[in-house]
Every structure is written in C-alpha cells, then in structure tokens.
Amino acid sequence: MTAKGKILIVDDEPMVLKLLTMQVERLAYAATGVTNGADALALLEKNHFHLLITDIIMPKMDGLALMQQALIIQPELECIVVSGQADLAIAVEAMKMGAINYIQKPVSIMELEVSLAKGMERLTLLKTLKKSQQELSRHRDHLEQLVAKRTTELARINKQLEADIKARKKAEKEAEQRRRQLIEADKMVSLGILVAGVAHEINNPNNFITMNAPILHRAWNDFLPILEEHYLEHGDFPVAGIPFSEMREHIPELFSGILDGSERIRKIVFNLRDYARQGISDMNQDIDLNTALRAALVLLANPLKKATDHLAVHYGEGLPPVRGNFQRAEQVIINLLQNAYQSLASPDKHLSVSTGHDPKNGTVFVEIADQGCGISQKNLKRILDPFFTTKRDGGGSGLGLSISAGIMEEHGGRLEFNSNPGQGTIARAVFPIIAFEGK
Image (cartoon, rainbow, N blue to C red; front, top):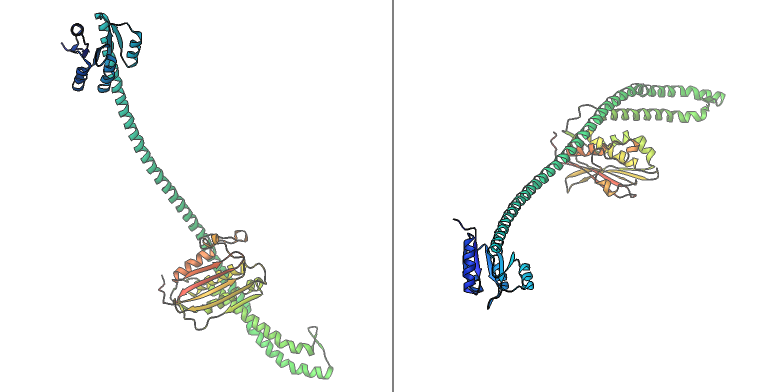
C-alpha cells in the first residue's frame, strides 16, 4: 500500500517518539523519527518530507527554532507542534510561524489524523495552486510574446501604411500638378495660335503703311515747290489747321515717325510670330544672347515703359554663342523680365538688364537686377516649384519660373537668384558655352 505522505517526527523523549511513529504509521503514512533538531535538519537537507511533527521543549534547539530552520530548507513543508505544556503564547507563536496545528500531549490518534489530513490537503492545495500559478505564468508569458509580436507587426504595418499614404499623397499631388500643367500647356498652345493669327492680321495693314508712307513722302516732296511758290506769292496759308510756314518743317518728321512706327510694328509682329512658332523642339541652334535679349525687350517694351523710368540695358561684347533653342531661351528672358518689372512699386525704381561672359566657368549669362519688393528666404527656396506664386490674386499661375528652370536644364544651364525683402532681386540665367546636344 502506498503511503499517504512522508512524515518527519522530532521528540527528545524516545518513548514518545516511538509512540508518535507508530500512530503515524497506523494512519498509513511513512514515518521517520529523530530525537533532536540537528539530526532533523540533516535529514531535511537530503530527503523530501511532506510534514514535520516536532516537540516544542527540546535541549539545544527547541521546536520553534527547528521550524524556522526547516522552512528555510523546505519552504513547502507543513508543520505540526506537540507539547506537554498548555501554553497559549507558544501555540500562538507556532501558528504565526506557519504551523497548521498545535497538539497537546498525550496525542490523540483522532486529533493527529485530522491534523495530518489537513496538512496533506494543504500540500495538495498548494501544489495545485503552484501548478496553476505556473500555468498562468506560462500563459501570461505566451500572451506577452503574442502581444509583443502583434505590436511589432502593427508597428510595421502602421509604418508601411504611413509610407503608402505619403506615397499616395505625393502621387496625387504630382498627378494634380501634371493635370494643371497640361491645362496651362494647352492654354499656351492656344495662345500661341492666337498670337500667330493676330500677328498675321496686324502685319497685313502694316504692310500698307510701310509701302504707302514712302510714296506719300515723295508726293509731298513733289508738292512742296508748288506750295512754296504759292506761299511766296500769296503769303501764309493753313494746312490741316496749321500755318504752312510751320507745317512744312514738321511734315518730314511726321513721315519719318510713321515709317519708324511701322518698322517697330513689323519688328514686334516678327518677334511675336517667332515667339509663338510651333515645332520649337530643335535644340541645335546657335543662340546669340544679345539677340534674344533684344527680341524680349521689343515684346515687353510697353509694360517696361509703364513700370520704370530707369531702365538700363547693357549688351556684353563678343559673347560666344550657346547651343539650344532660340525661342525657349527668349521665353526664359521674358519670364525673368516680367517678374522683375512686376515687382517694382513705382516708376522711379530702377531696373537693369545685362549680358555677360564668364570665361573661367565657360558660361554666358543674362542678368536682371531690380529694385523691387524682394523675396524672403523662405519663398526663395520655393520659387522654382510648380504653381508656387506670391501673385495668385494678380493672376499669376506659378508656372513661369518652373517652366524656365526646365528650359535651362534642357540647355544644360541654370537659374540663380539673390534677393532680400525690400532690397530687390538679382536673377541670372546661366548658359554653358560648350555645345549642348539637344534631346
């Protein structure tokens, strides 16, 4: 028959020890008896016991001291104390130390059986509780691992989601920019067609002026002797409400003004038609920047005249040509000039335009300096961004400089800006002198 449990019995009286051992074995427990605390501790060091039954009053080491040491060796050990003295204080102290019962001698077999059963039950409960705690700890560790793994996965998914959202927003922004650029490009194509048509319509009547004005001038020269003779014979007479004596001096000036104006119209029409010309993909033209600047100044003569009374133009001498497309280079200069004169607060502000050559860096450039409102450092970093403009209320699209920057890249060049608020802006379009192979 299997023993219910292993019991260690300690009593300094051999007869009492033998009696307790017999009673414990009769109750189907395996009993080991010793007569002192030292032997009991030695056994506990080498063997596992379920319960300890110890006498209280013993020489060298009493029962309470033994309990204290025994529980250090085997913390799960259940203890029962027995004593021949009915001392309540000792009983309370023993219970405080963890004893499950305090039995007075002589020991009742029934009371002993109940105490042993209680001790074994507590051991079973403690074992079950410990097992449950271990199981709970294992589940908790597993759950923590799952939570940690899931948290890591969620962090990765969240990071990927943020990246996807950022990429999608960027794609949407780029798509919107392309859409608006297509709209603006379509408008520019339509505008180019319109400008070409208007230029043609203007050119036709201007041809009549150009051809007929010299004929009228020669006719005046033929009429002049007759009118002079009439003046000498009959005195002064009115011509268009002005005395002939004054009018004969101004007529040549009027014809000269008509011819000059007609020639100016012809140049403007030529430049408009050239600027709006379709099929400008040829990037292998030799460009003279001075010629491109002159063409741009002709087109913008009227707004420049309204914007400033102090326009200074300097053409660099001996500029080497650059390789690219004349119309696109002219467009860059026009965009820079427009930004410059639109920034001027009043006509008394200065605007200077010049071309130059930098042999050291192998470049030529067009530089435009204005005394306008200037640009903040924050906006200066963004002025080449598509659709960025500080003149939205004035109808600015924010595409001029962005398109110009793209044109400069096509030519292997760049745009440079130096500006401070309230101090004006210096803009420079820099072209490489070396031959550039077009796309």
